[in-house]
Image 1 (tube, rainbow, N blue to C red):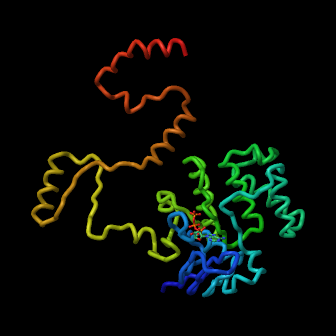
Image 2: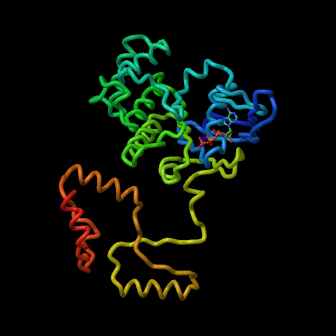
Image 3: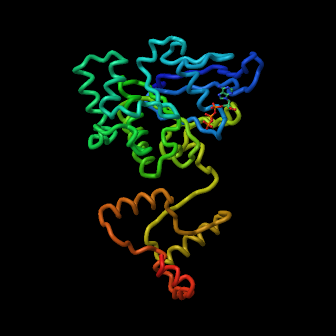
Length: 316
Ligand SMILES: Nc1ncnc2c1ncn2[C@@H]1O[C@H](COP(=O)(O)OP(=O)(O)OP(=O)(O)O)[C@@H](O)[C@H]1O
């Protein structure tokens, strides 16, 4: 028996037209969006700049009113403010006070949510640990790197222990290490049973982390589904094997040809640049110093430096 997953977000014909100062129709930012997000999933809103991701998130939060259609969160209309107590939100642009430190920031937002002092102190400590800022909790946020700012932003979005977390471009402006840390934190949230909706346009990150995605283009829903289903190429079969002797490989090739398999390619898989980069950084932290680089394998001797270059180096 399969259980129907609980619907946390539902939009029906959700439409937003921005109007100018005189009320004239200006931009149709979202057109008749129908979607459902289920409890415990990481759902990605994907699309190029201006496709309506932020508009969707703001409509879900009740920060904007739809021109047409409805959005429901926890089965309640988004205009019902009490549902906000169960939601966390990380906006695209950080709006935190730069002269507060991490602890003061979380204490401040904890007070806004009227969390009692003992519970608040406990949660502030846990969140600072969770986002890896224990060593920097007394530094003012203006001294934080972009990655640290995003992490304290995420901690702030979690201060009310929300069931649903909306993250607008959580990894924008971060290097691959900062991105990997945020992705890990988002996966942890799913482990805790929380529902996460995030927007972004960095495809590799979205592929890596989302269970399901919606692709928006100029406000229209163009694709919706499980990432694994959308990316599977149904008519191609891939066989991976380690250390297969060449003779066996030749036999495999013949079997495939005998059965009429088309367009056979046999090659070595490649990793992603992200994985390579993260592995090198991790190894470099463990073993500082010069690393033997793949380029060292190049056999041909390096061309001798031209006299001008040699000169300019010695004077610099
Ligand atoms: N307050 C506003 N008034 C008028 N038009 C707006 C307003 N906010 C957004 N828009 C327009 O609505 C469309 C969708 O914008 P939105 O910010 O939702 O896109 P996005 O997918 O989040 O883009 P990005 O990746 O650049 O953040 C764009 O054409 C944008 O210019």
